[in-house]
Length: 336
Image (tube, helix red, strand yellow):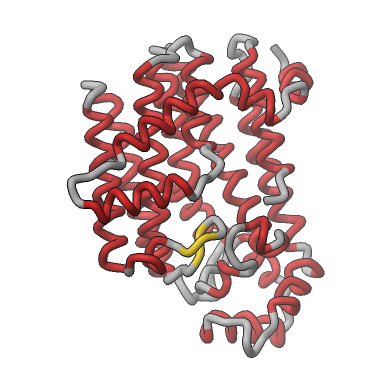
């Protein structure tokens, strides 16, 4: 099937229709997470329940479930691994919030704001190990290979980010390397694990992993644009949070390429002070808009989204394939 044909089919599915395809399975994933988050230590159980109640898009287990169903592998393994990837994702968020000193997550006080840094780090560790304990039930070295490579890559990404915190001289290549390790790698692993549940042919597994990687790149780029443009009530955390935390993301990287010395000095002030007290956020938003940084970042996101769709070429037509196509549009069109 040609690329344009795939696009037309994908556009026919709405977010509601995509969710309907996996609603029952997602409910089982939620039940599995609730069961697996109960620990002998009450504090960990409380944190696990708090995190699950905070919600989230569940995009990662949804991606795993859709690729599993596409390759004929829906069942207990897909449910278990859906819980695994969501627990790994949650653990990374807990650790990220500690490292960033974040106060909010998904519109609620962050775990570290509620329980403190020490407890949150240990809870994140427990969630990681619990995810691997669930994965071990698959008795599959291939699954463990994917998950170990994933988690090592994510930790490496966090270390790279820590090294660059507060630095204004961050290149586009630096940024892309970070997104590869911290976000795209997880999306790729979800798609690959779904293919493994379905015992997909190696070439299909690679196509789906490539799809997931490009989708993850697009997702993060859009997230970084929304950090400048979304409403705080929709974003679930303060707008302009990345720069306040010392992170220079792609819209700002593009803006700095042509920034006047005075504009550059504004950015350096925020990176140094970690606040918008001396320089208002409105001035930064004006900078990334008039420089074209926001538009350029969205164009790059669209490029990755297009590549994700192209990766689905040659896969059998089905509601699940069309859902995967439609997700590429939803990722770039979202406003939160």
